[in-house]
Image (cartoon, rainbow, N blue to C red; front, side, top):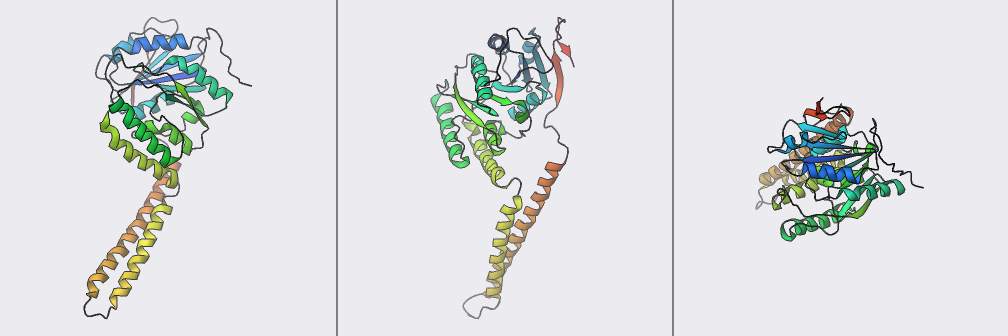
Length: 332
C-alpha cells in the first residue's frame, strides 16, 4: 500500500515532503509564473522550492528576489558553472524526502509532479524519469538529434530510457545526494543512477513550447554528448577497476613488443633489416609499459577519490530565504 498521503495546506517543516530544484541561467520572465504554477500544483503537500541562479547575466536574480514566497530559497552561484554543478548545489541544499528536478523555462509542467511522486511511492523506486512523449521543440534542431542520441545511449548502455534529456525527474533524496555530478553529466543522470543500482521507472509527461526566452541548447552539444557517453562506458566497466582495462592492454602490447624484439634481433635473412624491426619491437615494449603505468596511476587516483573528503565543484555566493513573518528576503 502506498504511503503517499497528501494533506491540505501543509505547514512548512524542517524536512518537507518534497524539494523542487530549478536551475536557471538567463531565464528572466520565467521565474514568477513558474513559482506560481508550482505553488498551485503542490498546495496539498509540504514542499520547498529551491532556485539555483547559475551566474545569470540578465534580470533573472532580481526577478527571483522580488518574489514573496515563504517556501522559496534562492542559491546565487558565484559564476556560471554549468547545469551539472548547479543541480549538485540544489540537490545538496534540498531537505525533502523526495527531490524533483526540472527546467526553469516553463516547458515542464508542475502538474506532473504529484503523479510522479505517487509512482515513486507505490512502486518503491529510486528515480522516476519523465518522457516527453509529445515534445514541443524544433524537429530538426532538437527532436531528431535527441532521438538519435537516446537510441545510441540505449544500445551502448542497455538502459531502456527513451528520453534522457527530460529535466523533470523525481528522486528519493538519499539516492540523489549520492550521485556525483561533474562536467556535463546532468543529461545522463538516469544512467549514473542505473550504474549505482537504482530502481528506475519512466512515465509520460507533458511538454509545452517555450514562450519566453531562447533555448541554451543546439547541435553544437553533439560532440560533448558523444565524448560524455564514452566516459560513461568507461565508468560502467572500469571505474572501480581501471587496471583491468589498461593493465590488459599494456600486457598485450608488452608481450607483442617483446616477441617482435626477440624475433628480429636474431634475424638471419640478409634482405631484412633486423635492427629496424627490433626498434619497432622496443617501441611496442615501451608502449606496453606505459599502459601498465597508466593503469596503476588511475587505480591509485580511484582509491584517493573514494577515500578522500569530497569537495564541491561550485561556490554558492549568497543564499536567500524569506522567513514566514518577514516582508523581505533574508540573506544567509
